[in-house]
Image 1 (spheres, helix red, strand yellow):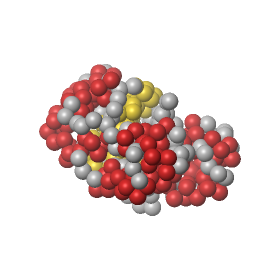
Image 2 (cartoon, rainbow, N blue to C red):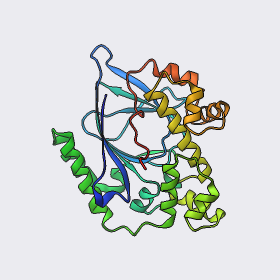
Image 3 (cartoon, helix red, strand yellow):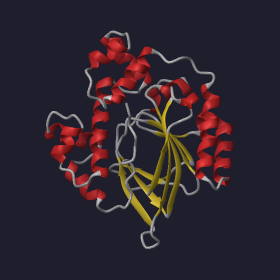
Image 4 (cartoon, rainbow, N blue to C red):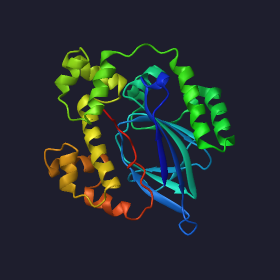
Length: 278
């Protein structure tokens, strides 16, 4: 699996943390692969360049074919992803609050879901995807996505202290007092919590938990030999029991089970996710 991560164009750096290109070809003997995909802190835009993916919610056996372009809202629950043959994709990870700025709707309306991006951006988005499908060079396709987003960003309002507060929470991967985040946002605690639900789609404590959980999960994907005790420490957990609690909530199983599930798939969907570089 080949993942390349790009720093976005300067015109997008208020909105986009990174843009990734993903290429994976499964062995003919394998045919297809199913891999767990627990929640990440990102609201993202995915372009599947050729072949679609299939997804099932945790606890549901049936896989559903996904749209060619997917917009994911605030994530809370794990899904399972099935790749058939190959995967060529472009992924845009928005900074906290940026998708709200692009769409102008409360993020609670997109909570824990994946949506056809064409439902939001219509014929422009469909035309862009057609260009991507015809483009042989995935780097050129990535540039087309950037141009589309730059055009959309030109009409957006300036960043607010709230967005800076959420970027700081992202930098610290959830290990910051909520009171300190509210102070950076120049808000009282209750006002900050309300604003988080509107702009991020969930309360700040939940978002901070997902940040810590995501770091722990990514560490395991990237370094499977690392002990869970060490992972809990590196992700900022008070102890291993708190890590286990979050795995049961966000991955649906304890860390040992997720470890066993990953042993049965060649795909590692999250180990290369770049959360932040200060």
